[in-house]
Image (cartoon, rainbow, N blue to C red; front, side):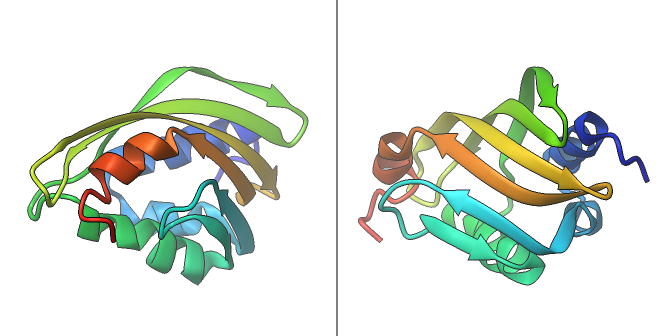
Length: 137
């Protein structure tokens, strides 16, 4: 396992893109904190590996068309400063409402001892509200 912050984040995004649940879980520290913006049901601060992986990331599966997955594609190369990595990616899927969801995401990741310890994500929450949560959930 690499301890290089750029590699850790790139490997995490690649694991998400291929749906590798074991690699996704292993990418985080036990005490990870994920900050997600806005007023959505997913918004807030998620603390701990189980909460981040199962409750936050895991709940997204219920928003997309059954039998499909979110397609994630990295945009550009991550920018690194010490243990912090800024990475951009695009997310694409069809929602349970039959709507096409395309959004851009930016994450500021803090890496400690080869694992992600914190993520501060930025995204177009208005797009997520009107497409992912089209029923007002």
